[in-house]
Length: 250
Image 1 (cartoon, helix red, strand yellow):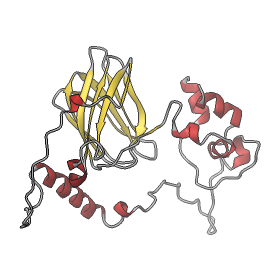
Image 2: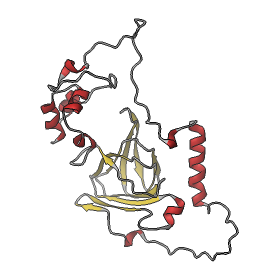
Image 3: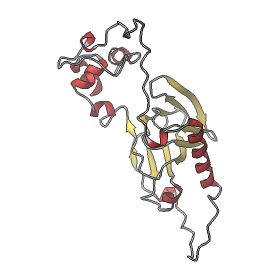
């Protein structure tokens, strides 16, 4: 798909969550014209900005949430809370070798391993997951969103580019990463990793949830946009449905 085709489909900025809807999708018929919304007092309304859905872990002040998250994460690495007295004998769990685990996905362009509480029970107590990704030279992991967890990564070998965007689509970060670098991806932030052409790009890390992450890809046959493909999505973007379908199914 060319940049010109994408520019016709994807708006530069959202005009608001409410648009006019007809079955014949397209253009200004769906409230996507050039006129700005005007409030009751005659002044232009503020640009619409996407907001969170009010999940439990998003409530309260941001500072307290971040403090709690960091405290929780670091306590797992340094041994957790002090052991409470108990008459039960507790045995240390057996170690787990990532390389003994079959790849969750593999093709010509690379492979990935993801381990959660279903694979290794102690992760349930710590409430973290572990992953390992190997991208071949010049390959990328398709743009996707982690709906359940924040991701922390450590580059083990090679070089590549990591790009992250805010949920509203604006660029948050685009940086080169090499062996020894650490990166982190907030939950709900779309991102992509691209390996350099000089060799494979290998990184491993943790997620802040022991449940299966189930990343939501933004491109490909299982992408969010393709799942939502229909007259409603076309109306929301203000483009003809056939034109949208041609791009989404490319």
